[in-house]
Length: 108
Image (tube, rainbow, N blue to C red):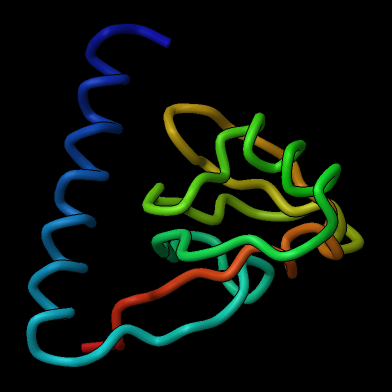
């Protein structure tokens, strides 16, 4: 990625974080799982479920509590799902995405 593209992506995520924090002050966040995000939606990872091997794999990929994650899209048949998290684009099976609990800002 070029420096300007990286800068634009991080600026975009800073705006998202600011929006989440502003809305969170007014209304409590909505809790759901990662597989419920639609392309373009963002959320903040709250917790991970699963056995220790699954948790370790998700953490190593960058799915850590507090990280902002953005849904990018999915494969034509709906699985796997694509996400942007911690500066990387990652694909995750829907069953694994259901193990990642997220908080999303309420719709305006």
